[in-house]
Image (cartoon, rainbow, N blue to C red; front, side, top):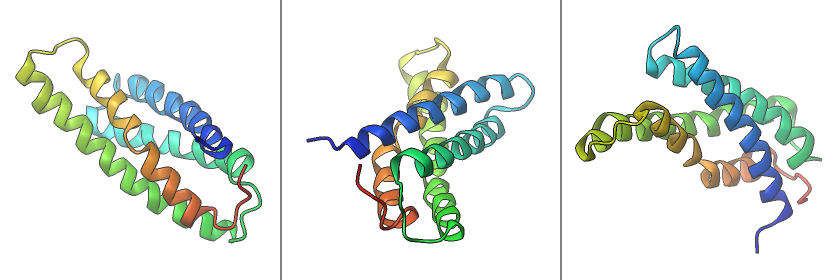
Length: 134
């Protein structure tokens, strides 16, 4: 059974992912692909932190400083996953199969979706320790 907390996490993550994805497209107009992914991820990460703290992991027992530190740590691992998957797909897998319909955009969308489960576990156990389970 999927918990209400996980569903709220997915919803908050979806909103943050949209912020990430759309800002990557806009940033991609003025900077190279990889830096635009990293900066857009920062925009999505700030959105995710605020939404998760306010609506998903309420009542956490650890300090704001601890929450921010762990949130950044968990998301640094996730951004590494995102970049590696995006590059693997856009630069290696898609060309091998002749996939040429917006390969960087599609690769980035997939790359953003992958860390959902690992991030939920990391945030629940580390970032927002002691939070109420919605």
